[in-house]
Amino acid sequence: MPTRLKNVSTIDPIAAHKKHFWDYLVSKSPVLRSLALLVIIAYACLAFALHRGPITGRKLNLPDLYEATVLELQAGMDAGHFTSVDLVKAYFARIEEVNLKGPTLRAVIEINPSALTEAARLDEERKKSGKRSLMHGIPMLLKDNIAAIGTNTTAGSYSLLGSIVPDDAGVVKRLRKAGSVILGKANLSEFARYRSALASGWSGIGGQCTNAYFPNADPCGSSSGSGVAASIGLAAVTLGTETAGSITCPSSYNNLAGIKPTLGLTSRAGVIPITEHQDTVGPMTRSMTDAAIVLSVIAGKDPNDNYTLSQPQDVPDFTKALNKDAFKGKRIGVPRHVFLNDSISGNHPSIAIAFEQALNTIRELGATIVDPADIPSAEEIMNSHNDSLIFAVDFKIQMNAYFEALIENPSGVRSVADLIAFNNAHPELEKPPGYESQSDFYEAEATQGRNETFWKQLAFDVELGATRGIDAALKAHNLDALVAPARGRTLMPAALAGYPIVTVPLGFLPDDVVPVPAGPTTVYPAPGVPFGLSFLGTAFSDFDLIGFGYAYEQRTRTRLARRAYPAAIPKTQLVDVIGKTTL
Picture 1: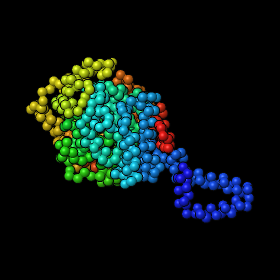
Picture 2 (picture 1 turned 60 degrees about the vertical axis):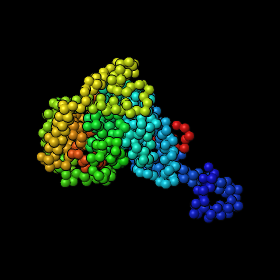
Picture 3 (picture 1 turned 120 degrees about the vertical axis):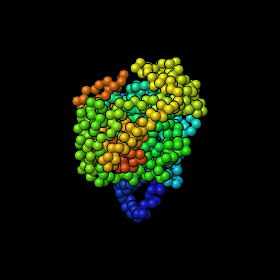
Picture 4 (picture 1 turned 30 degrees about the horizontal axis):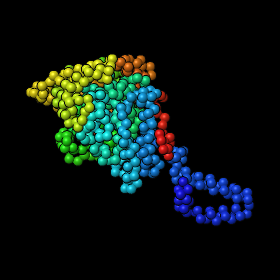
């Protein structure tokens, strides 16, 4: 302490002049001597506070972790107001408050025991050589089907608890290279909800994750924990995965910006699979800016995922898509037939009202709205269940390969057949009341590989989603994108085609909504639960969609209109941990 104060006074350009002035005064009067001492002490305390203000945080405008952005956190670390270690401590404390205590949101399945060590190393690197990227020192949560060495990767299943992965997932390698801190793993619908139509957000290990906007509300899934954690600031940013709605839906239900990238833009290597023909990895964040920053890091080719080798040669800096004028001169279509039919989607009437207001906003931002701009294959998509065969065949092939590639798996599970047997042998862990079914596993185990029927149905799915789906609508009306409410069947054409979806907050269900059971312990709809707006486009139109999402987000600021219910909002802030040796 004394050394620091000495250093502060030494660099003061008028310190020497002040010293001589006070020497003169104190030589004339004992009273002035006492006053001089008090002034000197006050001056020293002020100098110390200005130099290390974050010890109390009262002299600095520290970011509120409920909404803190990556850019705000970087600015604070660059200025020396706080460190990555401080952020990790604060996020750990916030998780402690609401995850298994209080509202028991069960959003986080595990914290990384090496996170503080990783953060300290990155803090030291920042001091010596500066930051690697905008993600340097930023703590983030991964959905627990994304492999990260040093943490469990379980898909929420006890069959994978303690298993040792051979390597980090491809996206995790990129995040580590960029300087991110892996804070821990987020809960999810077990095996990304390819087990059965169980309640969204439930897993054997993690239990039932719930929404932070209404007690026990459905968080949607399968990236449920990622959505809930991001919504209330349990991490700076999170990653989710999507096969058919698993980023889009929880982003919608949790008041977030979410990007389901084009198939092949981000690597799936090291991600527990459902199907290589639809699986993708993307960010779930509180702002489009943060989502663009994360996507810029995780996008790119990976020799361990051949789908990524078909992407454009140069991956763009997606932050350059963040343009408030992105809609000017653009043509945006509304696929009204089927996808905006509430009797099919099951949407509450308030969503349609908010959507019509959103169309007016998009017009005000300079776009031409083409309404309707229907998808020709819409009814066929609704009536087709071809993807169930694709899921079943691919899941068996890919999961068997995943199990075999593990360095170790204490449960002894090495195949889908073993997985079924494990769950049957351990019902107390994997089949509690209301969560017994594993019908998808049985369907997958019964398949016989990728035969002629499989390839025909896969080709038909692509035709429905792309050729006679999104691409047909875009071409017929000379459109730049489609827009629709995120909830409902909006996601299906993009899922079948492998095309991108960008989702931003649209509104909140009315306070007079009557909660309806959605699972053994969850409800939906429910008062105040958010809903989102989705932009859809053709392959690798992610950049343009990000611009549209950003322009809409910046004009409306919908996320800020409502917070989570009080008990679900963690109280810990940076001021509570800076300068503290323990949490």
